[in-house]
Length: 90
Image (cartoon, rainbow, N blue to C red; front, top):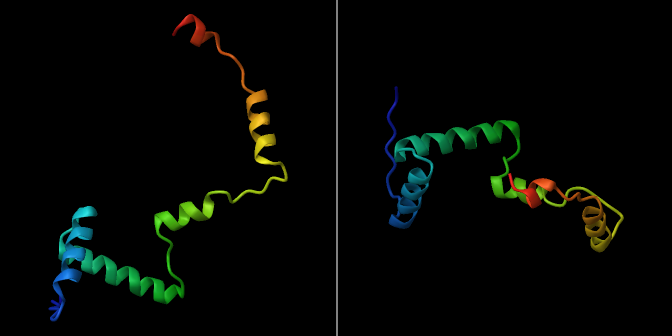
């Protein structure tokens, strides 16, 4: 197995890498390998994966509805049913 030494990493970049490694429960070496593999895989596919936040933003509001917000809220409220469990207890 080959070894790789990286020289000239500024302290700020290294601290960010250490924090990312800790956040993802990896050693710095494991994190560097993960990032390299992911980057190379993305280049082969010709696209970049979205982050979890980007995916969430894409999915939020991804449906269309011609009704106004008030009409949607009224529809939701009108279909609610009272439950005896709440008034009688569990």
